[in-house]
Image (cartoon, rainbow, N blue to C red; front, top):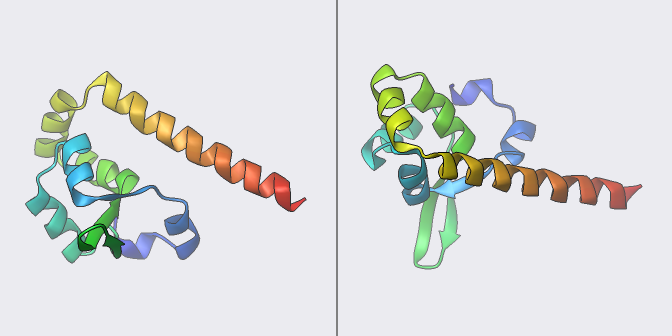
Length: 107
């Protein structure tokens, strides 16, 4: 997935997480994440964090990019537990419910 493949509207719908969380939940090294965002394979952004600026990446893009790497997908397949997958789905459902509630309030 390249940054050219995403439009701004789809970027707004993504769940952005700090590099440390993406590393922990997907099982991809931080150096791989850096290569991916520096080469435009995944989008990234800088946001104000509790200790200064921090880099965030969309977890969905990280998962998709990891799935395209045979070496990483084997590692990810071993390391992502069912609980982690459920947590990702639960977070996404909560985000979608909040978005639906905002859309219903506009009516």
